[in-house]
Image 1 (cartoon, rainbow, N blue to C red):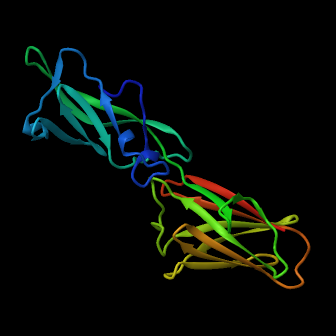
Image 2: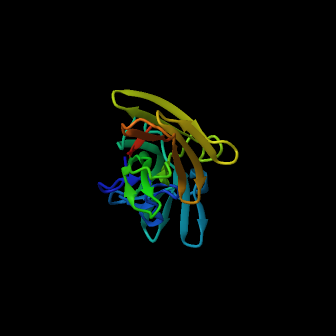
Image 3: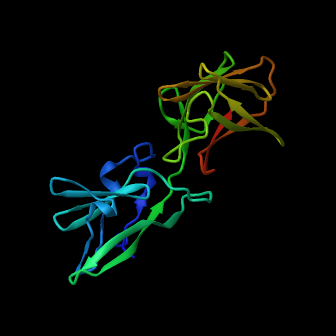
Length: 239
């Protein structure tokens, strides 16, 4: 088999990943000494100038100036929750030796999963985990979230939803908040109502407490889930 020299591909570097970096998606593939790829059209290679390209798995191989690289273009299914790495056989490449003998070898790569990300900011853009409800019984800020390379089942559109665990004292309940076509959703807490509105910076939140609310602090735990089931959470305490 052939592959990189101990390097892994990080799905966070994909175009819609949490750390997009196009240059990091291309890595050198080690070919054993004395071997070259069979660059014939029958093996799926196409030529443009002195560069040959072949689609393999979720990306493509390039051969130029005696060097082979592989470029990732989309994520793979990791099958488990968490930022794990998996070894994937992406396909086969036909190599030939100096005597013209040919061999089909597997292209095997290590691929690291991307993870969703969520955190809460106040109206000044500072990351927070607690907010004090003012004398007008309101508080507001923004929820920044990314679903990463795997995306979300709702594609961040009208089908997007957030899970929220609301707790106060020893009691708690969970809500799944869906967004309508106007990008809005809302839910009641023990002491008030939270309205969520999608915007260019994420999701704006606005909390309005009921007059005469109980004195205990309310805690909100927001959870985002990507298409593979990976999760991230952010906590906000309302005092």
